[in-house]
Amino acid sequence: MKRIFSMLLGLAALTACTTIPAEEAVVTVPNNSSNYFKAICYHPVPAGDTLRSWETLDQDLALMKEAGITTIRVYVPITEEAVLDKIAAADMRVITSFGYNQDSIYDILSGSFIDYVDQFKGHPAIFLWELGNEYNYHPEWFGDDLKNWYNALEQAVDAIHAIDTLHPVTTAHGEIPDSLALYKGRNLDMWGFNVYRWDVPGSFFADWTKTSDQPFYFSEVGTDSYMTVATDSFAQGENQNAQAAAVAHILDEILAHEGQFQGITLFSFTDGWWKAGNPDTQDIGGWAPHSSGVPYDGSPNEEYWGIVDINRAKKQVFDVVKERFTKAQ
Image (cartoon, rainbow, N blue to C red; front, side, top):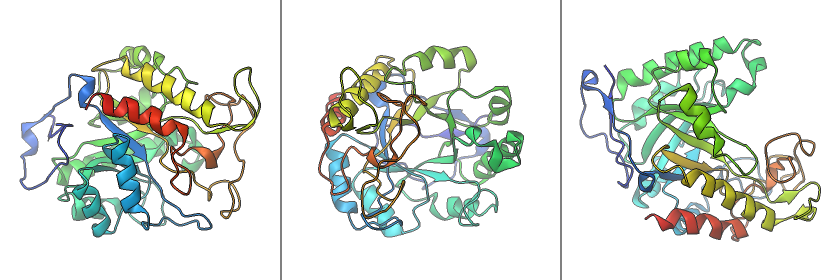
């Protein structure tokens, strides 16, 4: 039997005040896009540092709320209960991602992730448990055999289901999974997908429909605000116009598919100066132009992905997001 999960996405938060028998099972899926969750990837590292800090949390939450964002996706679990309390008080929720090997700190390899689930499953800020982040692109992390990852994923899903009957369990997968991933992920409550198809992700819906009928959300979409090379429309260098245009197209393509997805997660909230060079400066860093599906230069310059800059000044893309995320509220 499937499990019961509250998927009333219009509610401010999920609570775990009662225990629901696992054998009563069904995942309730929203039937229109006005119920989709609107999320942002969030890893706030101040300029000059490499470690996450919560010093701007109040300001960040206010900006997210203004943009219509309802949900925060973090790549490292939030251990400070006071931070979770503030997020819940702001009527927002958290997608908590667990990595495979994080030096035994709430990771899947050590099994310590389940301690976090057990400790925080009753907190009203908790929304989804997310296992891994596009590990299908990195077989070298698993002895060059992705079956090792999928076995770990399968076991982790079952471990969470055994102690938490309220929160959906997901994974963030890069693009469409193959048959092995689909089988090993058969007990997931939803799939998350990191999708970078230039500024036209709409084709993903038909591709997924041919593959599976499981519910899904976009665990990453977006682009950066730096053009490594010029195009006919956008100049080389820092270019907020290019980012705003691309994200507008991406969101419009997704939102045209009403009722076919559970949520959208943009990458990311703030520029990350720690990612590609000296954390005291904003460095140009990424892959060679035209090597990926990132518009409009094919180069994901890692330190330029925010909808706000490192000082929390709104980029042009902020209003693009705000217009679309607040329209359906």
